[in-house]
Length: 210
Ligand code: PRP
Ligand code: URA
Image 1 (cartoon, rainbow, N blue to C red):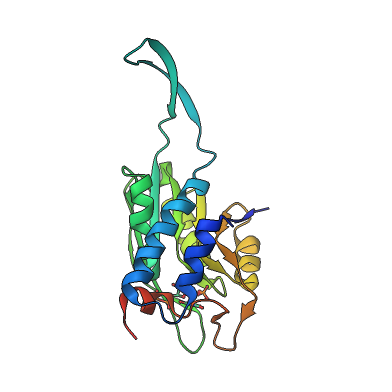
Image 2 (cartoon, rainbow, N blue to C red; image 1 turned 90 degrees about the vertical axis):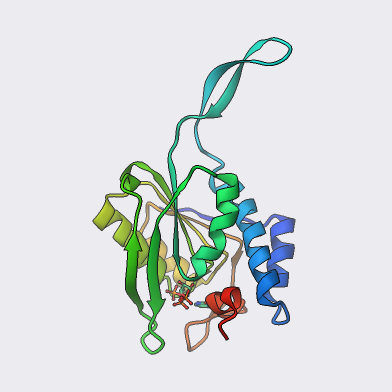
């Protein structure tokens, strides 16, 4: 069964509350999303394996520990997932980045795929899929299915910002092998499949398109 990790660190909660506020403009919204993504990345990578390495400090020789050659990839779901990439890359500067383009049809709320470009060796990498909003779960579930079926990925994690119970349920049913990391589990979806209380349309708030 996939684990739901709710990262309730006070700094993340504080920044998320400012993001939710309708008065927060695109510049601050983007900056806060970048900062939260870096902080969440710390938890998403908490269990990466370490290996010993012999080094010499200015004082003596010692055995230190480094990440054991684990290769990572970050895969944002366009558009809003892009807002989480820079923060993660600050933490993981050598990670490769793939892109999946999906938008939700306004009437059916079902995801429509329009773009996909992955690093050639993505099947050997631990993949962190990013999308700030997990609403019905349709977009994230389709993105994970695509990465498994079309690219052979076997190690996947989903990093979002705000999740609805409906989305978590769908993800855990469709992808029991994929852990979900979120800063908040909100109350419900409205009749347009938007998260309540949520933060509105993440893509529009990041890019100022409304
Ligand atoms: C939003 C969001 C997710 C999706 C979540 O994208 O960024 O990708 O909706 O909804 P779901 O869980 O019900 O699938 P949107 O379709 O608005 O596209 P955009 O990021 O290009 O604005
Ligand atoms: N997509 C968003 O950007 N926000 C929601 O609340 C739901 C889907």
